[in-house]
Image 1 (cartoon, helix red, strand yellow):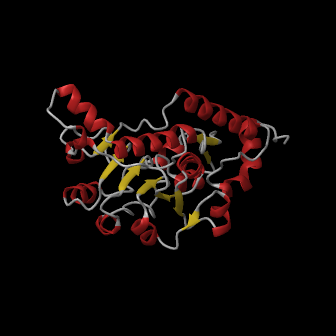
Image 2 (tube, rainbow, N blue to C red):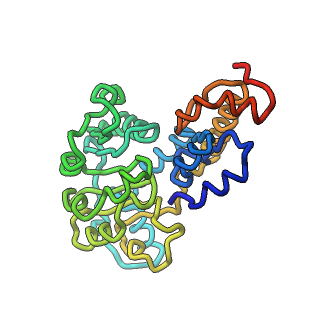
Image 3 (cartoon, one colour):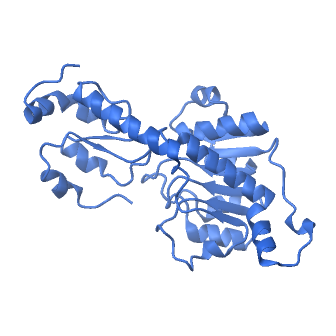
Amino acid sequence: MALQGYAPLLARCPSLLVLSTNGAGFDTVSLADATAAGVMVVNQAGGNKEGVAEHVMAMMLALSKRIVVSDHAMRRGVAYRRQDFMGDDVQGRTIGIIGLGHVGARVAELCRGLFQMRVIAYDPYQTPEQIVAKGAEKAATLEAMLRVADYVSVNCPHTAETRGMMGPEQFAMMQAHSYFITTARGGIHDERALAEALTARQIAGAGLDVWEDEPPPSNHPLLGFDNVVVSPHTAGITRQSRHNIARIAAEQMLDILDGKKPSRLLNPEVWEVYSDRFARILGYRPQG
């Protein structure tokens, strides 16, 4: 959720030129307040795409192969038959991706290249040509994609438009053998609706890396399902991702100081007044 009270905080920082997020997400920043204050906001979109995309694949495989539930049964010494843990192959199945940005495009590439999957993408901000160039089919609507996907992966930002976009109606549209996976942000999916869909066996399972409240309480209903694989918002927390994010953030700061427009500027309208603010704050005009 976006932090509240940004305007008073920014008013106390008259020399601030830029705010940098610590990853691709920007739901912790009030873009409106920053823009009103003439402060640029940048993120590091793509810096953790490998880590997050691989996490999606790991959850997809763990769910399909029932790895977690079989691991737990063996460790507890529960009597079982091998058939009790019969899973599914991923090869040749269909994945629906919500949001075909840096992470979504990498998920598409991995699914297509590793498992020859059919990739369908729902991203209203990209043209059919852009989506095809990334190796996916453009879904006419979210509903059309949900009805045919064996896996649904959420890889879009958390915004006012995407909040609650996966609710009771959407889960009901998914196939009974399908899996829901999200490594984006809590709040894009309705947690209660997901729990109800799992209870009613409307879907086969879920992989959840993000939560409405983090960490979720230990009695959270979604933690009680053996067909749900969970992690504590760690998809993008890899050594390589941390390095990439820090590098991209530093590069953008240096670009700004050199008078160059940063590559991941979220409020480009602020750039129009950048030169004047730069000169007023630092005493000289940028040389870029």
